[in-house]
Length: 375
Image (cartoon, rainbow, N blue to C red; front, side, top):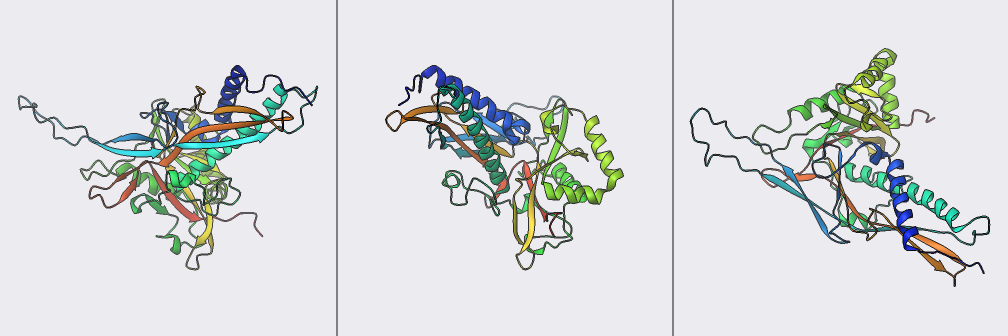
């Protein structure tokens, strides 16, 4: 039997918790580009660390309403006529999420506990990054879609913690001439025109005394942008229809944009109408569109600021993620557990009449979407 010295040593556990947390942030697609710290960040996702909260607790986030008061001129009295600050309060719950790896009997004189910890950190960081990226795509879209290849399944208890919410009519758009998922045809693919329509909608929404909230653009380095995050196959169609000359202009615009060194431009395809064009394979897809409910479609995301929220609670480790080690089989091998107390949801608010739950900070854009390499 091997002698397993140092298993669950407090200093080692703290060290590897920190190393794993750093690795997750460096690996996660969303964390690299779209997540900002705190309730006032002007990023697509606000990350809230509430270290006073534990599993099952609720974290509250306020959405500030714009002031619509008429200005007071000259010596007219301001006293008593000040506009009250008004908020919509959104809530998300956090719960324990865990994973783990079994180091088995692979430890030898050449493969030390440190070596296996390093392997476990890499595998766990990749798993957590994938888990978080998939979760944010799912919550942003309000559906798992087909869920093909995802770690998350439709019956996961995570979706009981914070239920998924489908886009409301004001924040739902469709490609081409389609007006619903059922009316999508092969002609209703992703296009620059759809992006232009989304910009027009975002720039004129709210601020008109209706109590419907404006979509606030992402603010970076003095510049303001929206983001169009589409599936890889939607991006292929977009580029094909734009043509080489137009696509070159789109690429040049991204390189010359104010704030182009900001993370939201990382890996960007280009910039069109002040919208950063991004793509990812995990954009939600399904095969339920069209009159026969059998056409392939994807839900691209048009994002401004604060469209999503992710919150972390107290893991007792000083980091967002906790690392634990246990001897198993009477000391024959070691298992490593990784834990977080977290929750995510789409930011929403109720319409003025209280009858509709509205999204805040993003549009869903559903289009026909097919593999360009399909036979």
